[in-house]
Amino acid sequence: MLDEATATNVIDYFLLQYRLPDGNTVADRFVTRRPALTDADRQMVLAWRDPVEGLFEVRGRNGDSLLLLNLLDDLEYCTYTNAGRTALRRVAKGSFLSARLVALAPAPGAWLFSGVMSSYPRSAMPEIAAAALDLAAGRPGLVFRNPEKVEQGWHSMREDRAAFAEFFGSDELILTPEEAEDRINAYYRHRQHAAGAGQCPGSPRGGQHAAPNPPLFTLSPELAEAETVGVIYDRVDGLNFYADYGSLRDLFANPGLPGRKRHQDLLRTYLREESITPLPIRRLAAAHPKTVDTVFRKLLRQPDFTWNEHGDALLRRRKPWYVESEQRPGVSVIGDRLSELLRSRPR
Image 1 (cartoon, one colour):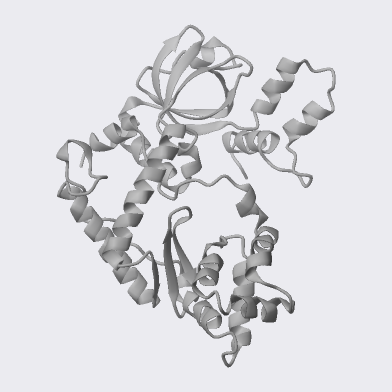
Image 2 (cartoon, rainbow, N blue to C red):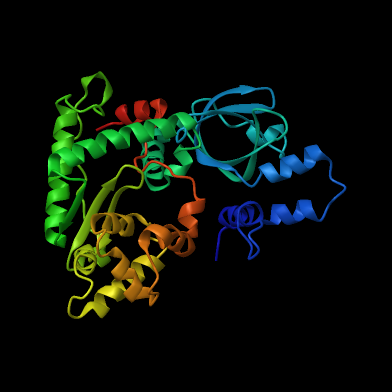
């Protein structure tokens, strides 16, 4: 049984963002079935499909609105409520809010609370900062609403990828699960030490040293049970891990190897799974140009298949979600204010 606040937020998400079988939202249908709406009203309702979710610090009050700083995207929002002025009366400057905001289009820079807002006192700062950090890491799309953070993310990822390739001698590895955990943890310790010594471009401001023990990296159960783990740090897709990547490499290296059905089934899985981008298949195709056509002719039973002619179309057909999505950096960044709050937490 959901509590009232959770139920309200679930309904809010369903109305504004949930994609129905035809790909539209309830907001889309509302606008389509009401041709008498003015252009301004139509624009406002459609803008609600892209709410801002976050943890906000209350920076001040301006009449009936609050000035909020989103700790995730580091942007300020002038925010109103449709519940009347009394709904915001007890919200103090310096306190924190967990909320969803929708744009009051076509009025530029104006936002409205949507769903249920939760309020926290200034004293909850350590917990709020930790929660914001977890959200930034787990849902980087909330951070990347800010174009500046997108560019910072790409910059940080380029630096980290270069350090990864220097440490390992390559941006692609094939390891046993045990080796993968040990070597990735060794890399993170190396980066943490470099940051603490001020040798890393991403080191904390003011010469502060990083925590002596970085979080321990562990593989998912699926990867931990694999024979091999492929580790690829791509310039666009970022750092990714692939189960039994060594077996897939063996198939491309020798399409006629004994027992290849198991390897072909693995390739089918790579083509089918939405959690796997086209990256590993593109990597193997590029590394084995003399055998890639044979691999896919046998797999697809298409004797005329050539990777150069048909490979891109195959990947677009099997993974349309990847082609249609906007590429984002695989490294999330945090804003100046959240950095300040994290540094000021009691240790």
